[in-house]
Length: 188
Image (cartoon, rainbow, N blue to C red):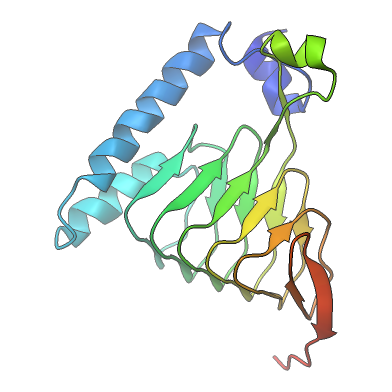
């Protein structure tokens, strides 16, 4: 089994020992660099280039510059997606956003994890778990979401939260680590 196959299965893998993974990361980072350096008024060029980076998109979405990711092909965004400046997605595993997702500035989504055992970790091994964000989610500025997390539908995540546990539907969460503050009465 290749290191890429291990990565996509959520098993321990070495990101540095696999030429394919290395080349894919470099190619993606070159595209992100190009995207981030386009003039903000070059909207058509920006839209065309970000569609080359992101694995799956709908028609209506926008990602402000700068934007950073590892591979791009593991990212899926739904209709009516918006991200403010400085979005970071470490997409060693799938990161999926539903429809009507709005993300504040300086947010990060991190699928990569390193082993707790120092001998294994010092060998450069890691693993990744997917992140899933539901529909109608507002994520405030400076939020960080770690690997293996599912955020339900109709959720608001307050600015500065660090999400380390799954989030149910229809609630406001906040804090470090993030906790449910209250239920939201959302009507569709």
